[in-house]
Image 1 (tube, rainbow, N blue to C red):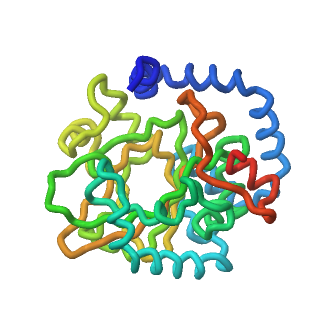
Image 2: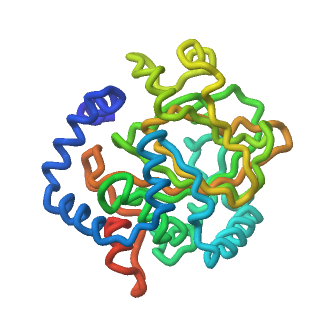
Length: 294
């Protein structure tokens, strides 16, 4: 990690990250203004507005009813198909990946990118998703990546995202999660989080970024937690920069297939020319290209 990246790593884990975001916003002012203008042109439903209000007020919203039925069946079938090929996906994983995860989309990337017509990209580009997150952020969002991950029991000590943490990629990180398997008991590794106000009680510790239960519940009542136990195809959005969260605490014999689409407000806080992990097709609309950063 370079000196600048190391400094940003620490700054972005403190309230000073808002100053960093203000600086990078000023550097990209024209595109910020265009994204805000485009957001004002969206035809946003009352249900989408209510979900956006929940994200801003509480840090989360259940959005299952906003998902488009015309894509859900294809999305579900695609998840089952990827899971059937898990052995092949696992052999192609980088050695530094989380041991309790298998990433199921890496193998189908072309030169590190997914097509905009890939069903898992299209799921993130649903108009209701764009409308809700644009309303919450006040501008057309930036889709950073999509991920399909299978969590399983390893017998190892809890580590990484199995511990309580916030995401520090940006001042706001809105993630769309969809279960592709039933997650109905603790052994299924439900996504678990503290709403925004409860997370505020925990604050910003000077040391560490991932915390065990006892550290968190020394400051926050256990009764504040939200455990997302829900059937397959349940979808929810969480601002993971505002909400402490953890998951993938799997019991032996259990597995969880989870879809994640991660959105920021443009531009990225970290410097560098990170290439976009998507490429357009002739059918990709100008609005979708804006979301994809293309």
